[in-house]
Length: 327
Image (cartoon, rainbow, N blue to C red; front, top):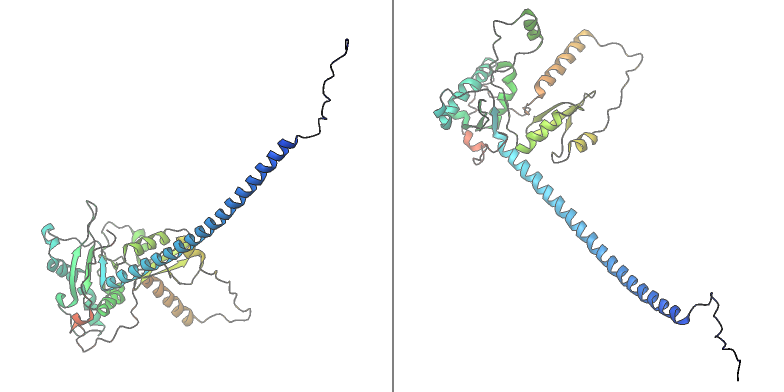
Protein backbone atom coordinates (compact mmCIF):
# COMPACT_ATOMS: atom_id res chain seq x y z
CA UNK A 1 0.00 0.00 0.00
CA UNK A 2 1.63 3.06 -1.21
CA UNK A 3 1.67 6.37 0.58
CA UNK A 4 0.90 4.83 3.99
CA UNK A 5 2.50 6.59 6.99
CA UNK A 6 4.33 4.71 9.85
CA UNK A 7 2.61 5.26 13.15
CA UNK A 8 4.76 5.57 16.37
CA UNK A 9 3.63 3.76 19.54
CA UNK A 10 1.57 5.88 21.90
CA UNK A 11 3.54 7.67 24.63
CA UNK A 12 2.97 6.81 28.29
CA UNK A 13 1.83 9.56 30.57
CA UNK A 14 4.63 11.21 32.56
CA UNK A 15 2.95 10.52 35.92
CA UNK A 16 2.71 6.76 35.43
CA UNK A 17 5.70 5.00 37.15
CA UNK A 18 7.38 2.00 35.77
CA UNK A 19 6.30 -1.10 37.64
CA UNK A 20 9.75 -2.64 37.58
CA UNK A 21 11.40 0.42 39.16
CA UNK A 22 8.73 0.52 41.86
CA UNK A 23 9.30 -3.12 42.64
CA UNK A 24 13.05 -2.62 42.89
CA UNK A 25 12.64 0.35 45.22
CA UNK A 26 10.28 -1.60 47.44
CA UNK A 27 12.77 -4.45 47.70
CA UNK A 28 15.58 -2.03 48.61
CA UNK A 29 13.38 -0.36 51.20
CA UNK A 30 12.40 -3.70 52.72
CA UNK A 31 16.02 -4.87 52.86
CA UNK A 32 17.14 -1.58 54.38
CA UNK A 33 14.38 -1.75 57.03
CA UNK A 34 15.40 -5.30 57.91
CA UNK A 35 19.07 -4.35 58.29
CA UNK A 36 18.16 -1.22 60.21
CA UNK A 37 16.07 -3.25 62.66
CA UNK A 38 18.98 -5.67 63.02
CA UNK A 39 21.39 -2.81 63.69
CA UNK A 40 19.00 -1.34 66.25
CA UNK A 41 18.87 -4.68 68.03
CA UNK A 42 22.65 -4.87 68.04
CA UNK A 43 22.89 -1.27 69.24
CA UNK A 44 20.51 -1.89 72.12
CA UNK A 45 22.52 -4.92 73.14
CA UNK A 46 25.76 -2.95 72.87
CA UNK A 47 24.30 -0.06 74.87
CA UNK A 48 23.26 -2.50 77.57
CA UNK A 49 26.80 -3.87 77.68
CA UNK A 50 28.20 -0.33 77.80
CA UNK A 51 25.91 0.57 80.70
CA UNK A 52 26.96 -2.57 82.57
CA UNK A 53 30.63 -1.76 81.95
CA UNK A 54 30.08 1.82 83.16
CA UNK A 55 28.45 0.57 86.35
CA UNK A 56 31.30 -1.89 86.88
CA UNK A 57 33.89 0.86 86.33
CA UNK A 58 32.11 3.18 88.76
CA UNK A 59 32.05 0.41 91.35
CA UNK A 60 35.76 -0.23 90.83
CA UNK A 61 36.49 3.48 91.15
CA UNK A 62 34.62 3.58 94.47
CA UNK A 63 36.58 0.58 95.69
CA UNK A 64 39.87 2.17 94.60
CA UNK A 65 38.95 5.44 96.33
CA UNK A 66 38.05 3.55 99.50
CA UNK A 67 41.40 1.78 99.39
CA UNK A 68 43.18 5.13 98.93
CA UNK A 69 41.30 6.61 101.89
CA UNK A 70 42.10 3.65 104.13
CA UNK A 71 45.75 3.63 103.07
CA UNK A 72 46.05 7.37 103.73
CA UNK A 73 44.34 7.02 107.12
CA UNK A 74 46.64 4.13 108.05
CA UNK A 75 49.73 6.11 107.04
CA UNK A 76 48.49 9.12 109.01
CA UNK A 77 47.93 6.91 112.06
CA UNK A 78 51.50 5.60 111.85
CA UNK A 79 52.69 9.22 111.74
CA UNK A 80 50.71 10.15 114.86
CA UNK A 81 53.78 9.42 117.02
CA UNK A 82 55.91 11.90 115.04
CA UNK A 83 56.35 15.63 114.72
CA UNK A 84 57.93 17.77 112.00
CA UNK A 85 60.39 20.40 113.26
CA UNK A 86 61.49 23.45 111.27
CA UNK A 87 64.43 25.89 111.50
CA UNK A 88 66.60 23.53 113.56
CA UNK A 89 70.06 23.29 112.00
CA UNK A 90 72.50 20.45 112.60
CA UNK A 91 75.84 22.03 113.68
CA UNK A 92 78.00 19.56 111.75
CA UNK A 93 76.92 18.10 108.44
CA UNK A 94 78.27 14.62 109.14
CA UNK A 95 76.14 14.40 112.31
CA UNK A 96 72.94 14.66 110.27
CA UNK A 97 73.08 10.92 109.57
CA UNK A 98 73.42 10.00 113.26
CA UNK A 99 69.96 9.56 114.84
CA UNK A 100 71.38 9.82 118.36
CA UNK A 101 72.95 13.22 117.66
CA UNK A 102 69.74 14.47 116.05
CA UNK A 103 67.65 13.22 118.99
CA UNK A 104 69.90 14.99 121.49
CA UNK A 105 69.66 18.24 119.53
CA UNK A 106 65.86 18.01 119.22
CA UNK A 107 65.49 17.30 122.90
CA UNK A 108 67.77 20.08 124.13
CA UNK A 109 66.55 22.80 121.76
CA UNK A 110 62.87 21.97 121.31
CA UNK A 111 61.52 19.63 123.99
CA UNK A 112 63.52 20.32 127.16
CA UNK A 113 62.26 23.95 127.57
CA UNK A 114 58.70 22.62 127.44
CA UNK A 115 59.48 19.90 129.96
CA UNK A 116 60.88 22.56 132.31
CA UNK A 117 57.63 24.49 131.97
CA UNK A 118 55.69 21.32 132.74
CA UNK A 119 57.73 20.93 135.93
CA UNK A 120 56.98 24.54 136.90
CA UNK A 121 53.27 23.78 136.58
CA UNK A 122 53.66 20.55 138.56
CA UNK A 123 52.48 18.48 135.61
CA UNK A 124 55.53 16.19 135.76
CA UNK A 125 57.83 15.37 138.64
CA UNK A 126 61.12 15.26 136.72
CA UNK A 127 62.60 15.79 133.27
CA UNK A 128 63.27 12.48 131.50
CA UNK A 129 66.27 11.65 129.38
CA UNK A 130 66.10 12.20 125.64
CA UNK A 131 66.20 8.46 124.93
CA UNK A 132 63.21 7.92 127.22
CA UNK A 133 61.15 10.35 125.17
CA UNK A 134 62.28 9.92 121.56
CA UNK A 135 62.50 6.70 119.63
CA UNK A 136 64.37 8.18 116.67
CA UNK A 137 64.93 11.39 114.72
CA UNK A 138 66.26 12.14 111.28
CA UNK A 139 66.38 14.94 108.71
CA UNK A 140 64.43 15.15 105.46
CA UNK A 141 65.78 16.16 102.05
CA UNK A 142 65.36 19.80 101.10
CA UNK A 143 66.45 22.33 98.49
CA UNK A 144 70.03 23.65 98.59
CA UNK A 145 70.46 26.55 100.98
CA UNK A 146 67.44 25.65 103.12
CA UNK A 147 67.34 24.19 106.62
CA UNK A 148 66.12 20.60 106.31
CA UNK A 149 63.04 19.64 108.33
CA UNK A 150 63.49 17.08 111.08
CA UNK A 151 61.14 14.21 111.85
CA UNK A 152 61.18 13.15 115.51
CA UNK A 153 59.25 10.10 116.70
CA UNK A 154 58.01 9.81 120.30
CA UNK A 155 57.61 6.64 122.29
CA UNK A 156 54.30 7.90 123.69
CA UNK A 157 51.57 9.92 122.02
CA UNK A 158 50.64 11.27 125.46
CA UNK A 159 54.07 12.88 125.70
CA UNK A 160 53.68 14.29 122.20
CA UNK A 161 50.25 15.69 123.13
CA UNK A 162 51.79 17.32 126.22
CA UNK A 163 54.35 19.06 124.01
CA UNK A 164 51.59 20.47 121.79
CA UNK A 165 49.60 21.52 124.84
CA UNK A 166 52.43 23.53 126.39
CA UNK A 167 54.45 24.72 123.39
CA UNK A 168 52.62 28.05 123.20
CA UNK A 169 53.74 29.00 126.72
CA UNK A 170 57.15 27.34 127.11
CA UNK A 171 58.68 26.69 123.68
CA UNK A 172 61.80 28.69 122.82
CA UNK A 173 60.84 31.99 121.18
CA UNK A 174 62.67 34.15 118.68
CA UNK A 175 64.58 37.02 120.33
CA UNK A 176 63.77 40.50 118.95
CA UNK A 177 66.68 42.13 117.17
CA UNK A 178 68.23 45.29 118.70
CA UNK A 179 67.52 47.24 115.52
CA UNK A 180 63.77 46.98 115.93
CA UNK A 181 61.97 50.29 115.72
CA UNK A 182 59.48 51.43 118.33
CA UNK A 183 56.65 50.75 115.90
CA UNK A 184 57.83 47.17 115.35
CA UNK A 185 58.15 46.60 119.11
CA UNK A 186 54.69 48.01 119.67
CA UNK A 187 53.33 45.60 117.07
CA UNK A 188 55.23 42.75 118.70
CA UNK A 189 53.45 43.43 122.01
CA UNK A 190 50.06 42.87 120.38
CA UNK A 191 51.16 39.58 118.78
CA UNK A 192 52.79 36.67 120.62
CA UNK A 193 56.44 36.07 119.72
CA UNK A 194 57.07 33.41 117.12
CA UNK A 195 58.66 30.11 118.15
CA UNK A 196 62.30 29.67 117.24
CA UNK A 197 61.79 26.00 116.29
CA UNK A 198 58.16 25.52 115.32
CA UNK A 199 56.91 21.94 115.18
CA UNK A 200 53.74 20.53 113.71
CA UNK A 201 51.97 17.27 113.15
CA UNK A 202 53.64 15.00 110.64
CA UNK A 203 50.96 14.86 107.94
CA UNK A 204 50.93 12.53 104.96
CA UNK A 205 51.88 14.02 101.62
CA UNK A 206 48.27 13.92 100.49
CA UNK A 207 46.89 15.56 103.64
CA UNK A 208 49.58 18.25 103.58
CA UNK A 209 48.86 19.14 99.94
CA UNK A 210 45.13 19.24 100.62
CA UNK A 211 45.65 21.48 103.66
CA UNK A 212 47.74 23.89 101.56
CA UNK A 213 45.13 23.90 98.78
CA UNK A 214 42.38 24.72 101.28
CA UNK A 215 44.46 27.35 103.09
CA UNK A 216 45.17 29.22 99.84
CA UNK A 217 41.52 29.29 98.76
CA UNK A 218 39.97 32.76 99.01
CA UNK A 219 36.88 31.36 100.73
CA UNK A 220 38.87 29.82 103.59
CA UNK A 221 39.98 31.88 106.59
CA UNK A 222 42.23 29.23 108.16
CA UNK A 223 43.03 25.54 107.82
CA UNK A 224 44.90 23.34 110.30
CA UNK A 225 45.12 19.76 111.54
CA UNK A 226 44.01 18.10 114.77
CA UNK A 227 45.25 14.55 115.39
CA UNK A 228 45.93 14.19 111.68
CA UNK A 229 42.45 15.36 110.61
CA UNK A 230 41.99 18.63 108.76
CA UNK A 231 39.86 21.45 110.16
CA UNK A 232 38.93 24.72 108.49
CA UNK A 233 37.03 27.96 109.02
CA UNK A 234 35.40 29.92 106.23
CA UNK A 235 35.36 33.69 105.91
CA UNK A 236 32.53 35.33 107.89
CA UNK A 237 31.86 32.01 109.64
CA UNK A 238 32.87 31.36 113.24
CA UNK A 239 32.25 27.63 113.03
CA UNK A 240 35.02 25.02 112.76
CA UNK A 241 34.37 22.38 110.12
CA UNK A 242 35.97 18.94 109.85
CA UNK A 243 37.14 17.70 106.46
CA UNK A 244 35.56 14.25 106.23
CA UNK A 245 37.23 13.12 103.00
CA UNK A 246 40.49 14.70 101.88
CA UNK A 247 40.20 13.00 98.47
CA UNK A 248 37.31 15.27 97.52
CA UNK A 249 38.04 18.42 95.56
CA UNK A 250 38.37 21.78 97.30
CA UNK A 251 35.10 22.98 95.76
CA UNK A 252 33.27 19.83 96.89
CA UNK A 253 34.57 20.21 100.44
CA UNK A 254 33.65 23.89 100.70
CA UNK A 255 30.29 23.59 98.93
CA UNK A 256 29.23 20.72 101.21
CA UNK A 257 29.46 23.01 104.26
CA UNK A 258 25.99 24.34 105.15
CA UNK A 259 25.75 28.10 105.22
CA UNK A 260 25.63 29.73 108.61
CA UNK A 261 22.27 31.24 109.46
CA UNK A 262 22.45 34.77 110.74
CA UNK A 263 21.42 34.95 114.38
CA UNK A 264 20.04 38.25 115.62
CA UNK A 265 20.11 38.81 119.39
CA UNK A 266 16.80 39.57 121.13
CA UNK A 267 15.92 43.24 121.29
CA UNK A 268 15.54 43.29 125.09
CA UNK A 269 18.62 41.20 125.80
CA UNK A 270 20.88 43.00 128.35
CA UNK A 271 24.51 43.56 127.37
CA UNK A 272 26.99 41.04 128.85
CA UNK A 273 28.93 42.04 131.92
CA UNK A 274 32.59 42.97 131.63
CA UNK A 275 33.65 39.78 133.41
CA UNK A 276 31.68 37.58 131.01
CA UNK A 277 32.88 39.50 127.98
CA UNK A 278 36.51 39.31 129.09
CA UNK A 279 36.40 35.58 129.76
CA UNK A 280 34.66 34.97 126.46
CA UNK A 281 37.25 37.06 124.65
CA UNK A 282 40.11 35.26 126.37
CA UNK A 283 38.60 31.90 125.63
CA UNK A 284 38.09 32.81 121.97
CA UNK A 285 41.64 34.09 121.70
CA UNK A 286 43.00 30.93 123.28
CA UNK A 287 41.02 28.71 120.94
CA UNK A 288 42.12 30.70 117.91
CA UNK A 289 45.80 30.68 118.82
CA UNK A 290 45.78 27.01 119.72
CA UNK A 291 43.95 25.99 116.58
CA UNK A 292 46.77 26.13 114.08
CA UNK A 293 48.61 22.80 113.87
CA UNK A 294 47.48 21.67 117.29
CA UNK A 295 46.66 18.22 118.56
CA UNK A 296 43.92 16.86 120.75
CA UNK A 297 45.01 16.91 124.40
CA UNK A 298 41.70 16.26 126.11
CA UNK A 299 42.78 12.87 127.41
CA UNK A 300 46.24 13.71 128.76
CA UNK A 301 46.58 11.91 132.10
CA UNK A 302 47.97 13.61 135.15
CA UNK A 303 51.73 13.07 135.32
CA UNK A 304 52.29 14.56 138.75
CA UNK A 305 54.35 12.50 141.22
CA UNK A 306 54.51 9.55 138.85
CA UNK A 307 56.82 8.28 136.18
CA UNK A 308 54.97 8.85 132.89
CA UNK A 309 57.90 7.59 130.87
CA UNK A 310 58.19 4.07 132.30
CA UNK A 311 57.50 1.25 129.84
CA UNK A 312 56.94 3.77 127.06
CA UNK A 313 58.03 1.27 124.47
CA UNK A 314 54.82 -0.69 125.06
CA UNK A 315 52.69 2.22 123.87
CA UNK A 316 54.43 2.58 120.51
CA UNK A 317 53.63 0.44 117.48
CA UNK A 318 56.15 -1.24 115.28
CA UNK A 319 58.59 1.25 113.86
CA UNK A 320 57.62 2.65 110.47
CA UNK A 321 59.38 4.90 108.01
CA UNK A 322 58.03 8.35 108.85
CA UNK A 323 60.25 10.14 106.38
CA UNK A 324 57.94 9.41 103.44
CA UNK A 325 56.20 12.74 103.49
CA UNK A 326 56.35 16.22 102.11
CA UNK A 327 59.95 17.13 101.50
